[in-house]
Image (cartoon, rainbow, N blue to C red; front, side):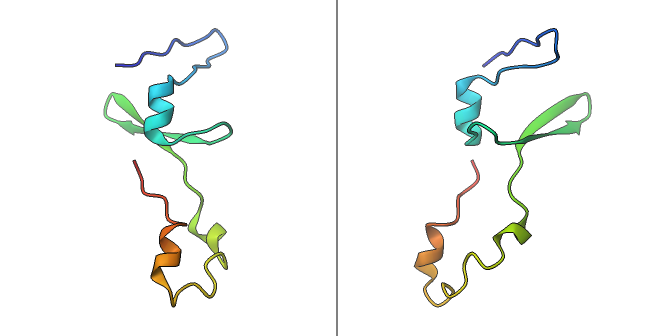
Length: 73
């Protein structure tokens, strides 16, 4: 199990295995979701409204949409 150390500034470096599993790259944001006494780290995905117009004209060919849809890990 990957382990990270908290610095005096309150920062951690996510281990490569975690970044890869979550599909994270530099400048991505993550969200910390409280579950009881623990937290779950979730990648922040773009708001659906940010995709407005991106798929215009592609609805007639669903296979064209598949290359734009990234499956969640």
